[in-house]
Image (cartoon, rainbow, N blue to C red; front, side, top):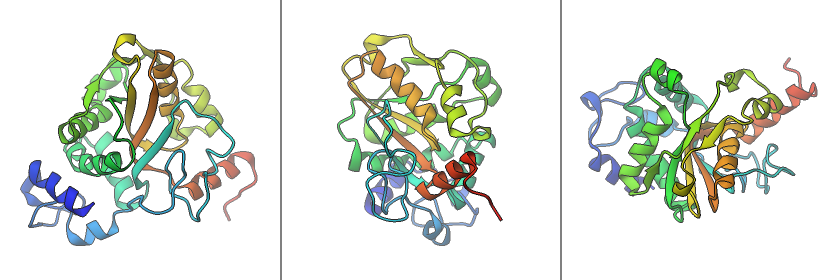
Length: 253
């Protein structure tokens, strides 16, 4: 993994001022992070859910979210756990106009891809409404897809579009997130996805509702298999706490 990331960093020699992408400390020898920050990156390289790929506290087949449930996507994986340095960087990426972070995240995504989804035919990103994209200035998942494509050679398809506004997922529980995403996406160009194994790229997996809704539309339009790859995912233990809190079974002291 380290050798792949080193080669990717050399190929994409972005590093504004040759400083750490997180703390700003000057660095040498390539890469995007200083040694101290690199050691703190919450890599999702331990026990994971066999389906969605989120981190687990102990060896088991499925996380609390996936156990006993069917999803439209065939499997999911993420490069990091959504915490610490990475959660701060993703917020900066989405809301702080830090577009350069797509290039920082891409090698980590590519490394997971090669170990998990090397049979994909094309990569899709999560579409935004045009007015929302104009307001933000960019679609962060499209930037991820373009940088990922530059590293892997996997072609990017833009067959899907978002058809209606949705509430912010972060403010909703799982049931409401699923309902919030119903009939949200549509595939305008079905011929572009028919018979393909498609990899969806996104920034964060929380409940998986967004990726599941998009995967369902891709499958409905003829996609053979759909995989999901995100920069980070909320850990299984955190999802269990959230679910227990939603049901009233968990209370913070």
